[in-house]
Image: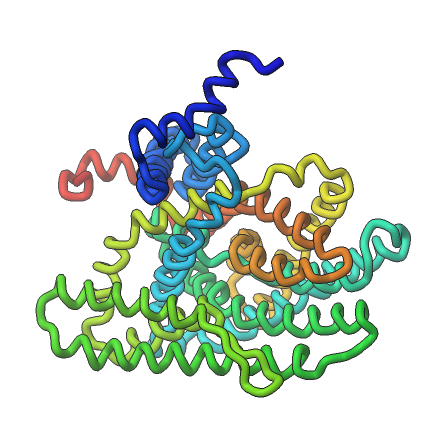
Length: 450
């Protein structure tokens, strides 16, 4: 028998919608407002624990998601199902576009001349080493326990391990106003990670598919990944030049900022297009397109730095929503699956070791200072959107559901722990002021307190 209070909760949505005549879009709008306010309130609580705001937003999303408040089925209060969260993917994609656009600011020629080659070496090496380490460990697991994980799944997870979440890293850097040699190097390495990860995944997934089907596709393994990167770079470069040309017709700061926002939205929309040229499937990488747009714009527009700061201020609520929605998307059902937990824990340990050792070795090769050698790898642990996108593609394998669930579990752990580890590493190298000193300075300096 269903308790009376649960009956009330179950009939509330239909009664409420019929009685008040509330439309679905209005419910989503209320839900977004609640998500934004909830993320902000949670950030005040986690500040007492000295945790990054990113972690607060993710926890708020988890609490508002279908496994906590969403279970109450109250319209507008949280997200009732994962399908409801997926409807808001356009918000997440748009926020990710703005984050990638902002990361393009790190690729100014003046900065690339000093650390560009080192960042490229570190970015490629750490990603490749991470993939190799995870591949070897998961293949050994298959060797001893072939019924737990297949070779195609192990190879695919190894490639997914290379991906790093740029959004969480950028938000931590912004929140604490981190700056210094490791911060600048970190931003470039994380930005390069998408291109390297895309190539590694495309090749590995092509091999995994060939092993499953017994047929090798040169198009899937070689041609399509290269075409996707070239198309993304080309579209991003064109949009960056077009933005610079159009913004010269406007002199008001507010109008130029509005134009920049419109162009990023347009770029996000265009990057979602897919088409076929003969046998070749063509698409774009949202991160690469928007990053390239920001890179070209920042290098050709003399007033780009001021415009980027104004756009960053405008997109802050959008970024908060991105992380709250990301927290709500975390599927806690994976915690009830023993095989997923076992493979997931092994994957997390192997990936963490690969990232740390890969960054450590590549930093030694490029002769970075000891502080960077010891701490850069830890800042590369966060993993989210890009990895989840790869996992969805990997679901087409015979045991692709395991790959998807393992990545979901890893993202749950990395997103909640990664931002804090990034903060601690930047504190350890002295590129974030200790919070005690920051608060004391604010009390003594009325301007900074404001």
